Image (cartoon, rainbow, N blue to C red; front, top):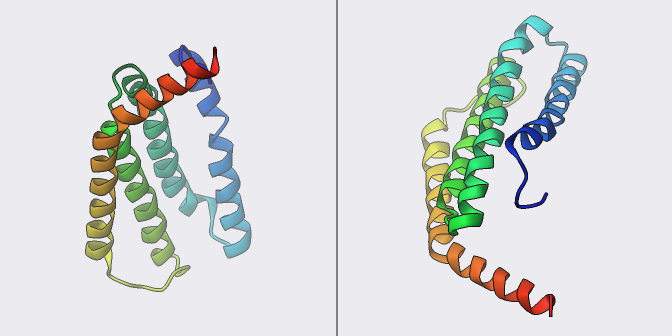
Length: 142
């Protein structure tokens, strides 16, 4: 996508990603014989998390491109990944598709560490990558 993409076009492209969630829900329905009523809430939660992430990414992308601030995008990615995996693990455990375990605390600590590490790298090296990209594209254009 070009750097000057408008929000309406960004949102329209994002809408095309939602059928993937519905296909996954249909696959779970067919493979594991879980009713559509039971699939409604987790599918809606998953779509809500993905839509929120995708729409927030529009502004965070703009912030990264214009000001070289990549930290918010790293935090958004970590939080959305934690939410999505939490939804999958919760309902997978409820429907007995995954082994029951109570590692939520360990998983949360791990995700916080990974997200914090990604944020630190983004804050430290994001502006340098922007400068490198600008230099590389200006040399390539000569």
